Image 1 (cartoon, rainbow, N blue to C red):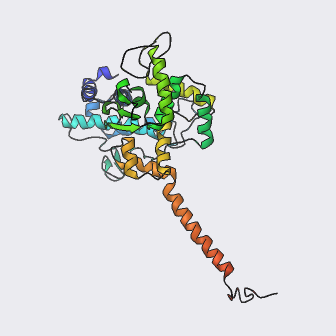
Image 2: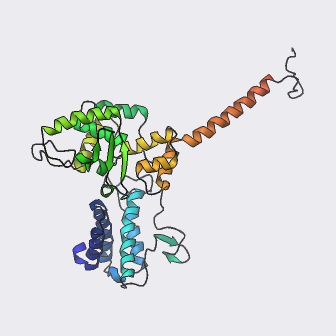
Image 3: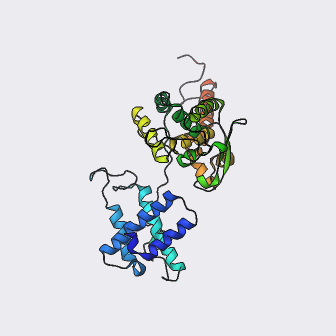
Length: 349
């Protein structure tokens, strides 16, 4: 599909040259390809398309059935596709038209900033083309986390170390699989997360626990029996790819297998990061400290974990309940107060 549209290929090539992550390029390509398919179906050139094509594309997305079955509806969007997926499909279309405007191919962006105004049309303010829902990340309960750990306890040392590091250092899946042997500082129990492996392109140094350090020592001894070469820390041990770098896809399959065995299907490679940051908020870490630890570009993302921990609401609730409790007790212990004009504290019936 994309190969038939030279401008689309050019646009994706620019993003790739700018160093965008391969997964980002892939997501952009899929979203734009779906839009171009709608244009072809309507026999419209996307370079000169009008608002009707964007509306048709959004209508096609919101009417699309779930890949799990035609009767399956995502609760957060009311359609077959989840709200985040709908947003992901619209973004590359908006960016593509930004590119066309900058190149002088078009005078305006059909999608604007992804907004719709009832009076002024697409791209002019009001509510979003696809209403954006901001959901809190899912984290396991204490029992679910223990169930996952129980299954992981019987995993090879590599997998146990990967889970431990992912939690200790709040690492995303790509950050974890991209760790190199020279990113580790066992003497100070620190990890260097290189900027090029992160979503925000912000490097950071984070600690890991003494228990994880024990796992690391055991794995490094084991790794030496697979390969003596430096490079990526985690290596495949399969017969087909032995000593090759472990891919994020393989790690995702490991986590998925363990999650199903533990009967916690929501658990994913990113869950440990969410859980770590939430636990830091629960322990009273300041907002900026958590943001630095996580490598967030701003504290906007970090605020979600403060909310998820319930720290502020819990403190306010407990203070409020304490005041209400004290007030109730004071009413019970005061004397000489007439209640409905019938009874005085200390009087007998």
